[in-house]
Image 1 (cartoon, one colour):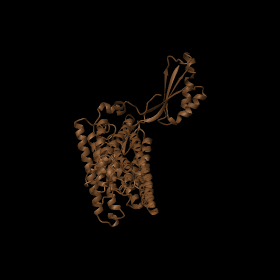
Image 2 (cartoon, rainbow over the protein chains, first blue to last red; image 1 turned 60 degrees about the horizontal axis):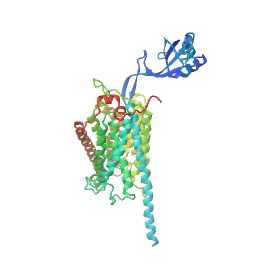
Image 3 (cartoon, rainbow over the protein chains, first blue to last red; image 1 turned 90 degrees about the vertical axis):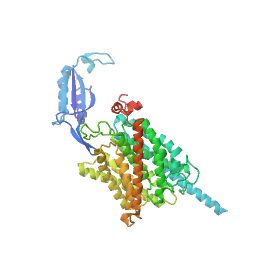
Image 4 (tube, chains in turn cyan, orange; image 1 turned 30 degrees about the horizontal axis):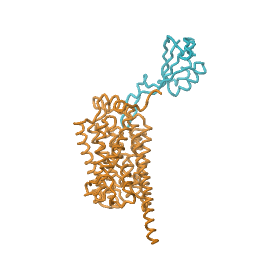
Length: 113
Length: 416
């Protein structure tokens, strides 16, 4: 099992969610996040005062998928989350030791679909 | 016999109509407290949002009772020109030619008193101790504000006798509150994090700007009770009320336009939070003269206020006077400006309309006296409290937020 964590533009969330559902990876967790990558934040003004290092608003999608679904999930996100420019976000992949569905108490791959 | 009855009925009818009008305006003015609460809550950080609601509650509750028990008698009792010593609401004729009961007159004046103190609550936001603030509120509403109201609106007040024109309180309410806010902010010092180690200004953005805007809109609405309600009666005032509401609107709109234009040309974008302040600045500035200036003058006064407020907000920031909601710039500076503007723009007696300098001198004298009185008394009182009971919360509490430490409540609970 893998945990796929993708930080993407909020405007791409609906597209990615729709595409993941179509690819039969319907289970996602979404977290609103603030951060900066290579672009190092930007400036805003508040009541006449310049504010440096404003963090950009992004969303983080978390999907736990079986090993065989890993590449499919990554492809779907890559296809649907990109504007082909800096600031599109990043994808991180982690190993997952165990998954347990609370209602039925089943474990492993069965618990995540 | 029949004629006498008709006369009695007519007088009763006049009182009834005026009572409806003043009661309505009094209630509208009272709603301005909700405007203050939301405006200030939106402009502070979420960790202090409830503390500012508490401060406005204290303004109304403690300030209101203080104004009832002591303040009103000082303001509208039998005055020697400077003060009076009645208590509670007397049933005697106040000499104002009122056609409403003294109680209803007290109610509408209550709205002015608590509006004045609510100006201060914004400037001391996020760092002042709640009980020190409460003590200040009681002193302000029972003695400080009533003395100024006595000078400006009591029929024997020394400024009234000189012909000072402050229709609904640019000086008595807004400059009074604004200069008190200035002194309080100076004694308190800036919030932690407002300036870095090298003294460089760091913006501390408000946590909910739409909420602040709603507060601004409620205040805007409230002003249409605040200014026309100061006629204190509808009968015989139908033309004046029309003039006052039109001038009030035109000045506020001009203030908004001026701020939008100023920020657009200065920064390349319209600054929306400043536009809220711009509208309020226009309202504050027209409050003194809305009964005596033409519509064109109202537009000019509002436009000047809308620019001045933008410059003033930045100016106080550079002086290291931290005013989280812009109360000093909006109410202090523009209360001053609006009062002086009457001396220039009054259709009768204004310098620009061939009236000479008499009115202008009186207006300047009045507002300088009121501003100085308010500033000095607040400064001394705050210093005294600082030496004794303290005025500022501990740094740990300021970092954690007043909501959590003083009030044990969060504005936004995270789960459930």
